[in-house]
Image 1 (tube, rainbow, N blue to C red):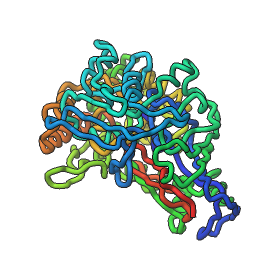
Image 2 (cartoon, rainbow, N blue to C red; image 1 turned 60 degrees about the vertical axis):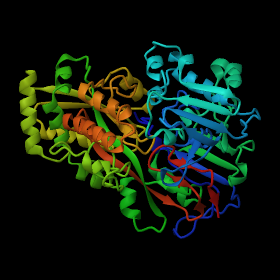
Image 3 (cartoon, rainbow, N blue to C red; image 1 turned 180 degrees about the vertical axis):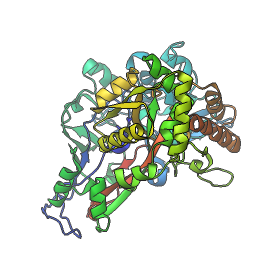
Image 4 (spheres, rainbow, N blue to C red; image 1 turned 120 degrees about the vertical axis):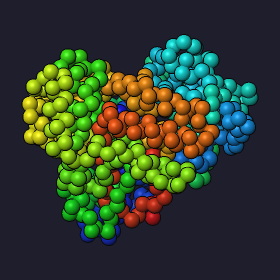
Length: 545
């Protein structure tokens, strides 16, 4: 779930070939004002939109009906217009004249093919659940209907019709997500098993196309797509990516003028907060603990399914220490599973995060934690527990955070032993997917500006519900928000708040912090659009000055 998904937000950006000013650091003057260089903490995992688990950067090469603009607002994409039926259940999209990067026309059938491909079981799309609400999608996901039964059709080359089971409140912003973009069936069939395994085995619908990506390398480039429908708006010729796993290395490259935007470690933040190039970007990303409710170890199965033990683990975490000292990068305290600044109450404008609060669940209360701990151990008939904490060492905070959790839990909860497993993200995800963990340190970044982007995760059957939590009341409330109450903003909000209080009260997922990443950024970079959810980085209008 590091978008773990990872994290859409774990893609960091920088700029190569610039003259650095106002920082007092090294200066490597270059004259190329058309090339932007972005740093990433890990390799690109895939460029197949059906199989991707995040689009933080690839939203710049794949485009859907819309794009995400400033402040999470929907802006024009491949659709030039759209109409909605009075009952909100039928959307009709009219497509503009647009081409793939290879010159093929983008047609309505490309959208139909793409959606069906993503829901074909053998594709194993990690995001298939996001199609829920489209007519017959749930039955197709469950294997009860063929992908051809999906509620999408192409009556004309320039017209896409989507039928929904019920109105979806966030449907328009969802259609800005690259997952719902087109795919070129001719290209998919031409390359077969090679499709999307290298940059040349893919075609692109967005402002840029990918070059020099071999599927495993630490460098690749986004190059201006001259067949893009709005190419005149694209100022950059090229974006160079390189994997930079160390914040210290990134800082050195920045000083040399080879990176213009580099993420900072907590120690660097302390020293550079007053630097004129210091900048922080908030994210709708929550770092949290996921418990394995289907644990294969009998004692640990009982422990993970015990509410008192989960509460004890949560209340032992001093989140103020985590954010200020362990991280020190401006990250904030969570109030529950859903982050702040994501959505507001339609009735009074209050932040969802303020209304989801359940007392005595995410506070630091060691005395109460020990009380719950003793009670929980007694209920499961154990005096000692040994739990494995799984994490991805590709995440910059994982080592410090797992060390803190291990130390804090062992110190505060008698009889507890914690084994930490910090491994590469791909391996960690495989283990999580296979249920091979007791506690999983994961994270989630919002895909769109609505609480539902988080609330879908703990639902029964969701692919990212690695812990297999299943709560009938929670499932019912989220389904009500997505169906019978979707047209009533106040009722829908109430459903989601009540559902959040269930997951928070049960501590089925234990939030640790909401992410903010601090950077040094050159004043020469302009026009980057950053959003807290969805395709967070938009370089369509970026330029160097």
